[in-house]
Structures are given as C-alpha cells and as structure tokens.
Length: 161
Image (cartoon, rainbow, N blue to C red; front, side):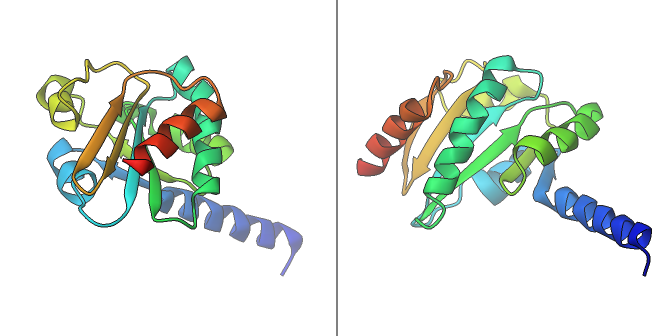
C-alpha cells in the first residue's frame, strides 16, 4: 500500500472513532433515561457546556485533567454539549482537538425550559454548569471552575459525602 492510501485509511478510522465518541441525543427524555439517571456505584460529573461559551471552553482542560486523574476509580466525567444541531461539524472539530478520548454527549433538545429543572431544581439554565451525582446524592455547580485545584477540591469534597 502506498503512503497516501495508508493516510486515507488512518483519516477514515479517525473520523469513525470521533463520530462514535460523540453520542447524540435529540430528546432530553432519552438522555435522562439512558445516561442521567443511571444508578450504580459510580460517581458522575456531568459538565454542561457549548463551544460558543468562552467560560465553558476555558474550564474544559481542568475537567479533562480530572478525568485523567480519576479514570481508574469508579468515577465518570461526561461532557454534555448544548451546541445546536447545525453546529455538529464545529463540535466534532473541537472535540478532536480538545476532548479526544473523553465521553461526549451532544444534547440537541433545545427546549431548555422543559427540562433544566429536571437536571437540577436550582439550575437557571446558564452554562457552564456541572452536576455531581452518586448513589442518589447530587450537587449542582452553576459556575465556572477557574483552576484545576478549584474543580479538584469540589470533586473530592463531593466524593467524601
């Protein structure tokens, strides 16, 4: 095989891998049933963000570092993009550059007023926002994490509850 053929195969496999990395949910109810209300012995951090949200993008590296530090524990960090469906290409490109290997949900149900209270009763709908969940306990943070230490402190404190 030529180098060009191998390169084409590599790019195809990369795009298939990226596509499978982003789970798309068009309806909040489906996301809620399949992902949000899982009850097991895993602690979850759901980060609600969008590529157009500067504070969201600024905190992502801290959350990725946290995901790497806790990947062997019974924890799962899930990045829930609220980008519009028409911006799927922009999201895919962003994920490839910044979140490759992370668990990404693309929630395209933009009837926010119908479901933000179901994520957490205190959520006004602004992002970034993070929901910490484990074994029936939840904690909500409607704020940006300004450093790795900031998110680590919140996460460790939650895990101890």
